[in-house]
Length: 356
Image 1: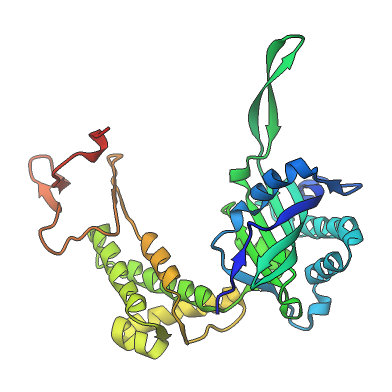
Image 2: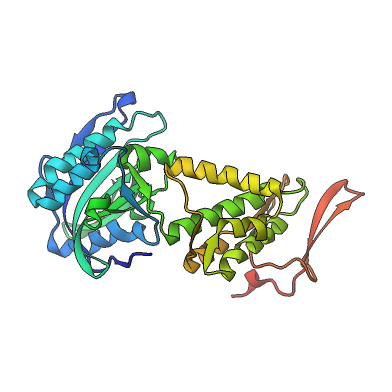
């Protein structure tokens, strides 16, 4: 069952700040000495910036092999939700935890914001929230100001709201189950550092997560089964799209039925099970083998399927997943004996890029 969440009612009111270095490189940890109170006039802008990354993410929750009472992040969040006075102390604890987990040489230093939110709308309730954002890069900004009756240009270094690397949004919902947590990591580093080592969360195995997981595994299997390096990527693209039709045509997923209808061969079933085993190891929990299919997430999965052919001559050909090559194909491959090179011929009616 998917949870109904609305973020447009929320307001960020107070923030704890920190600069997180890498202990292995002897970079320091610097934390707030007091809570930064967000001015009422700035609250709409900052709230929109803080919450922008958390749309259409898979739900997670805190987990511990023994008890949630022994989960450090869960304990900090619980204390903050219990009393506003705990934001500074517990916020600093969260920053220290992140610093202690940042020993890998690939982990970059960055700025950390821990913001308290009020009135987040989830399942008909208005609840508190805690937003944690880490930005690992700063960019220059130009500022034009008035001084002594004239205009002056200056540069400042700051965080680009569209380039925040890591973040999580923790809501005061499901407190006995590990809270409702949304998280992302766009830095390209090993996401286990942020998701498992720092936050200690696992995905909630709901319809959205399971649909995404099985669709991703199905597409990966198809992409690995290219007959040869000469197989056009658009053929693989179409095969992946055809595989997802299983999810489109049914209301419920059943693994045995999927194996019989889509995978068919023992080799394909074995390959798919390898993917499922790796996914289960990453999640730290077994995956359900039957569930209600989330149609919205199937549509998203199909949109992500696009073929890209990168050639050694510096040319890239991007093919949309909606392209049909079965009947009257618009792409033709061949070999030119005179040049001794392969070629791709493209048929078209109009050059749409030339239209204003």
